[in-house]
Image (cartoon, rainbow, N blue to C red; front, side, top):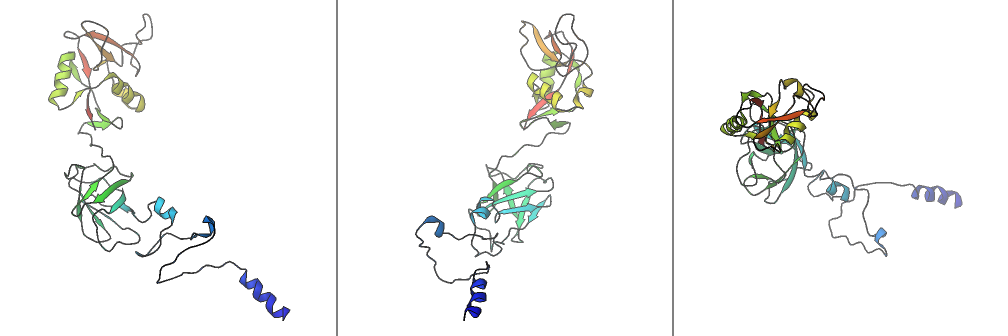
Length: 264
């Protein structure tokens, strides 16, 4: 008898795994918390499968990498049977979107993506390679995450909140530079924006040929600040072009190049 039971008891002690399909309610009534839990659940692949805390926390069932520019196409796993009002999804675009872009998940049909005030998206509104969170309102997918406005032609994103012109404009007075930026639907860059763009982009300083106007106080009754040159601002100090160099010139008679900035 001992020879028969020993192998059997050993076999019972070996860990095992299996699928368990129970069509009725299960109630866990262990004496302590550790005994009232189900562990080891993998990421669900069926619509009626149980979801672990890890899968829920990682949004595994609501995340999809999407491709396309006019219609973003991707798949959720497990696939939803239909779009439902209140359905939240997280998408990762792999291409720059066109204006009035749509989203099609699991072949359920393309739906328009709109911003928080209900308008279709502009081109390049969804950053490539960055997740965007959307909610389905019954007709369209509304973006919940922040959207960045694309930079106008001739500008580039110098920071999260603003765009700056890639090249400086021709010499004019301080008032003239402010006016020309206004005509373009932009504004004269602040000193902080100009310096940040210069320091962040190694190629920027190569486009600075002479001092440029910035919208900043100069501690002078009739002068405005210029950055990029002609020196470090110290009598007898260094001269030339540098991101941290600057000075001032008269508002109305001084003449300098300048750059415009826009908000994103």
